[in-house]
Length: 232
Image 1 (cartoon, rainbow, N blue to C red):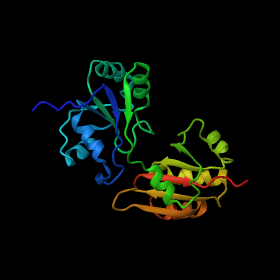
Image 2: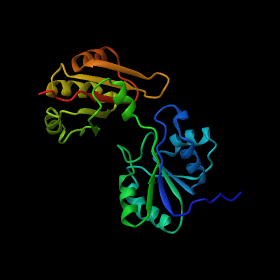
Image 3: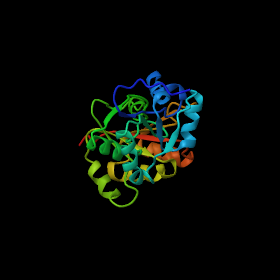
Image 4: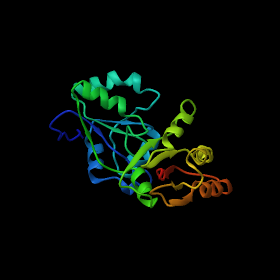
């Protein structure tokens, strides 16, 4: 059966996907994913679970950090030729600590309209659940792995806004230790893990408290770290 075409203009649709519970997908995101010609997915195997859950049969193509530079020209060319595409990442908003920025920038440069749907994100549930001030905050994503890491931590030690970081479980202890060294062990923080999943948890306390807790408990799952801003 031919795919139903209801779009008035050629667009790249940036579609956020659930960070945990598949029920967090919006009605609109499901409709878009069903109606576009192609879905650009960070990991087609992972995204296949979401598409299978909602009976979405749209063709997928891998688009990730290791091939996006090579894919850019071809993808934008297809869009300009009339193809309707959606960009998704494994979880959350494409382009935010995930592939997507380069494609969006190139589309804008080449006159291809980009429409970004609102939707699931791990940042805001972690921020609200932290019980730390959220009237002003700064999103830092992942800290530099090596080069520039110490410099960035020194810069952030005087940041007065609440800070939000993404972190991998195997690096959490290292990051907590370094934050305690640069910010002070008494700085309040919250580690949120497995947001929107069955075992979602929020661990609140000082950096010293959290360091002690995760030295005794192996960090597991996707992590969001929220840290209180400086009061100095």
